[in-house]
Image (cartoon, rainbow, N blue to C red; front, side, top):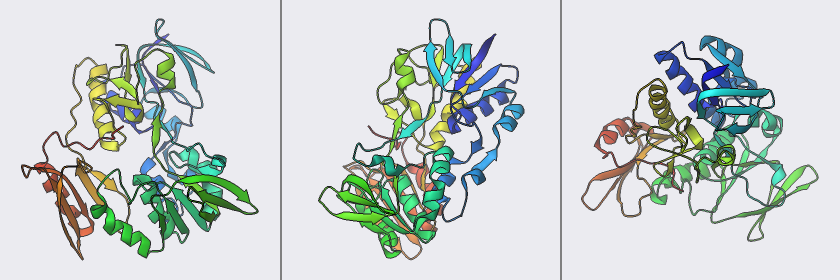
Length: 385
């Protein structure tokens, strides 16, 4: 039997694609194959599990079998794909081989882990499965060291702090959220976290970890040591491209696709965290939603191109939430910052006074959509490489 469409991966992008496909065509034979449980859960909630006292199992929204039944889907959880045979239109797994007419790669990305001594003591929180492995240690820890002050590291720092834990944050950058906004804009959130008791170590690199009795000793590159009960690494993601590379598909930082989400093989497509489009990675929810809508149309006969308007990025730090959009790290912008008790509005303009980026916080976040309309179509904040 040859399936109309086989999807490898069960994350957000894969599920959005399935939902969009079923809105368009309920007769296509769909098969989803993934190495995990395939249970549906809300990944952004991983940044709030500690203050909410959530267990890994609490995150499940819909068990795999129920999702498969509701979407007329053949499902294979806990089934790693070992090889793609492009010539035969066949994939090979530990449960047998399957043939396809069209294949979609929604392989996601893996947490980046530094190659340092003691890295086996690090936890990551990029999936429900990873949280399940780390849950007991992290929930029981009084002291937690966070490596990385980007989006996820910042959200976790506030969440762990709100849960009553002593938090230490280490980052090579000079300020919080350095890959998302200039330091004069992120300073408000940085000061709020420091005021709440989060210890921050910037311009600092982690050199190694060692277990000492019932604690972990972290050594920084300058020789300083920090004592902690647990370590979480949040220094970014690496797209899963090995399977595609072994199959001879074009891949650089991600699996290269065109504006229609087609890879270098016209029968194979890719989307989500593993895909590289227009030379960029798109590791956010809204681009994945738009990509899923576009690809669903193309898999059912259309020839649409993915259009990416300026999109909001939300920093889920409840005590001081932020929304941002545009080219917030462009070096040639002039920033005008208005800050008051109700929140912050920071606007980045180019030499022609065209708005290219903005950041809003707290009570000023209601201005986000008005500002979003003022951004040119070229002001898209994608992950640079």
